[in-house]
Image (cartoon, rainbow, N blue to C red; front, side, top):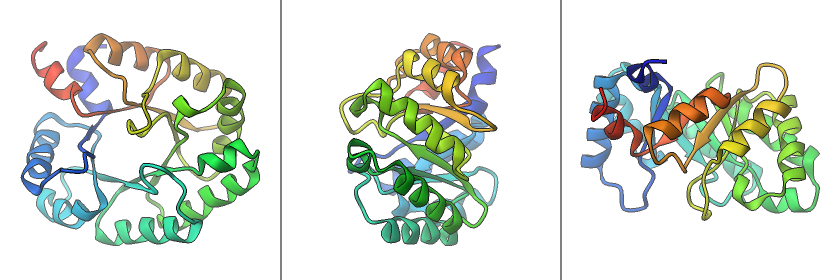
Length: 217
C-alpha cells in the first residue's frame, strides 16, 4: 500500500477535554484536504462541524465517552441527538463493569439499542482493550459480531492504553461475519499504521498520523 492511501483509513481525531472550535475547524479542513475517512470530534461540536463541511466529510462522534458506564437510555439519547446534529458515524463505549460481571447479553442488548438510535448511521463499539483479559476480548469479539454494529474498536485513548498489534491480530482471528476493526490510540508512527492495516484493521483512530504522513509523501 502506498503511504498516500493510508489517509482514507484515518478517523482524524480530536477528543481532548480542552478542544476548541478553532481546532475542530482546522481538523475538518485537514480531513477534507487529505481525504480522511472521517473526523472524530466531541458531540458538542457535531452540529457546527456538519454545517462547516457541507457534506464533504463524514462527522464521527463519541457516545458514553470515555468511561462507558452511562445507562443504555442515556447512550441511546446521546446517539440519536448526534445523528440529528449531523453525525454520520457513532463510536460508543461499552459498560466495562458489565464485562467484569459477565453480563454479555446485556452488553449485546445495549449495543443494539444504540444502533437503533443511530437511524442507519455507522456504529463502532469501543471495548477498551487495555482494561480486559484475553478471554474478555475474545468474548466481546463474539458479542460485537452478533450485534448490529459495523465495527469493533480497541480503545478510547483515555484509559491508560491504546491499540496494540496483538489486539488487532486477536480481533482478526475472532470477529465473524462482516464485522470490521478499528484501531485507536497507540499509533505512534507511519510504520505502526501500516502494521495495523496489514494485521486486519479497517480504520485508524488517531490525532497525529495525518501530520506524520504529510512528512513522508
